[in-house]
Each structure stands twice: as C-alpha cells, then as structure tokens.
Length: 494
Image 1 (cartoon, rainbow, N blue to C red):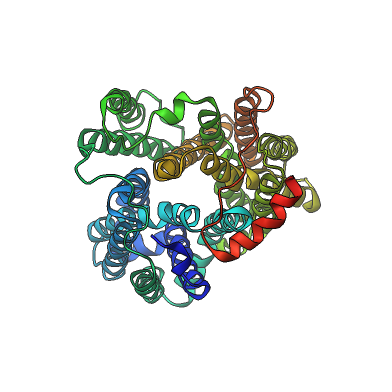
Image 2: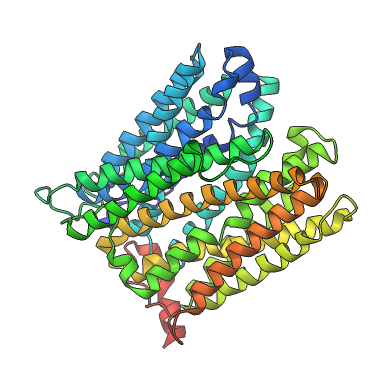
C-alpha cells in the first residue's frame, strides 16, 4: 500500500474515528457500574447484577488477540468495521432491553465488538506512523484508556441521574455511526494484510483461548462480587476456584496447541525471547495499583467521606492527572533515549512510593497526603501503559505487531481482572476480620496491590541484562510529516 497517499486530513479523520471507538469501548467497561442499581431495580434483575458486567468483560477480553491476529489475514478495516457493527448493535439492543436477560445478551454482543475497538487502534497507529509521532499517539491512546477507566463511573452517574439509564447505551450510537463511516471511507482495505489466506486458521487455539480465559474471568469476577456480601468465599468453591482451575487447565492445553499451530493466535515466540517476555510480564502486573485504586477509592469517599457517587469520581482526579501526564512523558523519554528499562523502573519506583503512602492511610490522613498518594500512583502507572506498547512494537518485526499487541492487551486485561478480585478480597477480608475500619481497609487494599504489581514488574525488568533495554532506531516513517520529523533525530544520534 502506498501510505503517503493517505493525506494529513484523512489521517486526522481516521485518528478521530478510531480514538472515538476506543473511548466508547473502554467507557462501557465502567460506565454501566453506576447505572446498574437503577437498571436492576427497573428490570427486576437484582440476582443477575454481576452478569451485566461479566457479559461485557469476558467477550471483550477474549476477542482482543483474535481481532489483532485475524486483521493480519483480512486487513485492519474489515475487522474494525465488523467490531464497530457488533458494538453498535449491542448498544442499541441494550438501550431497548425490557428484561435483565435481554440486557445481558446485548452486553455480550457489545463486548464482542468492543474487542476490535480496543485492540486495533494501537496496531493502526503502529502501521501508519513512526518516530515521535507514533510515540505521542501511543501515549494518547494509553492515556485515553486511563481517562475512560476513571471517568466511566462519573459519566454513567450523570447520564442516569439527568437523562435516564438507557442513554448510557444510546449515546454510543451517533458517535459510533460517525466513526464507522469515517473508517469505511478513509482506511485502506489492504492495510495490515500480511498473512496468506491459505494459511490454516488456528480454530483449536481460538476455542481453547476463548473458553479458558472466559472461565478464568468469570471465576475471578464471582470471587470479587461474592466478597461484597460478606466473608470472601473459599478459593476451592466451584463458582470461584473451580472455574479458575478449569480455565487454567484449558490455557495449559491452549499452549500445547499453539506450539503446533501454523499461525498461532498468541505467538509463543514472544515468551521465548527475554525482552518481549519481560515487557509482557510488566504489562500484566504494572497496572495493579490503578485497578485497585479505581475500585476502592470511590467507595472510600462514599462510605467514609459521605459524598455522592458522582462526587467520588471527581475526588480521584489526581490519579487521572498523573496518568495523563506520565503516559505522554514516559513515551517521549523512551523514544528520545531509545531505552525503556530505566523509564519503566522509574514508574515502578513512583508506584511503590504511592503504595507505601497508602499503607498508612486511614480516616485521619490529611487531604493533601491522599491527593499526593493518588498522584504518585498515576505518575507511576502511566509509563507502564504507553512505554511497554512502544517497546513491544520496536522489538518485533512489522508483520508480527498484530499478534504482539493482541497478546499485550489480553495480558493487561487479565492482569486487571486479577487485581480487581485480589483488591476486593483484601478489602473485605480486613473488614470481616474486624481489624480495621473502611478507610484503613481501603489503604491496605490499594497499597498492597500497587506494591505487589510494582515489585513484580520491577523484578521482571531488572532480569534483563545490561543494555537489554536498548531499542533499535525507528524505521523510516511512512508519511512525509514523519520523515521530516525524524531527520533531526537522526542528526542528533549521528
């Protein structure tokens, strides 16, 4: 494909479209949470509460690597348009649902489409841009994920209170239709096609990955949801530990199948090379503190500080601001220095400082300290979002970017599910033991998960040999703007 024929105006339109799709998909992971009490009351579905979330999360997660790898065969546009269509159909169906069963089915359809909206924007940016422009856009996409993750409950509460819960779903339609039209008009059909159509499709791998990850996520979700009602259930109970064990067993079988697959959905070569294996491990664990904070801190503000759900979303803004700034700063530093390990270890250090601050957090902690601890978490997690993406893309061949990014996003989602279940278990366990109040339990829950995630990511990064964090210089940029941009970079390096 002659990439320079994609004019700057068309590039901007395409970026606006894919970023809008990513924003909608990520918002729908969290936006429904604040609307669910109203939804379940009106649809008389309190017993199915958790499934309105799980039905979206599971297909959205398991389809991430599928869309990424299949786009290598059929092209980015075909898979992105397919995902957009499914997401919009699910949104319209959810808004029109008359029963909880209908809503859950619609949410599953939404999630199946959301996998494309979450995976393909990162790959498209890598396809179309190089140098600092790619880094800046990867940082913007990572920041958008963080913004939507934190802003979702706030937006959901506002729409539910002032417009009605159905608007939570209907708001996707005009934005999504406009984005879909832009993608159909601008994105070249052949972009991303690097795999021959006659290559055997990894059907066995797709089936095992889908069911295995699905069972794992449902088990983790049941563990966290059940904890909210009292004592945490035992890990050996069928609906929690049983599902998790079954999911892990299927994933072991999945690895065996992938070893023999001609075109594996998850390329195992990524784990055979130390650098990419380290980056994937850091991606899976480095964001633990973000997930724990977004889960537990709004609850603290509501229960201990007695503020509304909408207000509690505003009070965690230091976490959001730190994240938005650091995803871009981290990306820029990595591209400028062509070295990722020190930047990512710096993020781990900041996360550790925030975690240690939360370890002593209680109802008497001054406001400025809690704001500082949240900001440190945001500043620390940001580079582990954008920096890992850039390092992965620079560490694999262009034709392998689809599989690498799909695997990265899958592990990040699964790591988030583990962090949410663990944070809820720690929080409720402390309360159930009668050892502490809600504020102290919040501090221990956020601090312990953030610390564990930062330490695991740092240990993985430090396992690289000296010089192992160096990145190759970027390839020539595919468009004129990037080419002009990279000339001064080359002069500086020379």
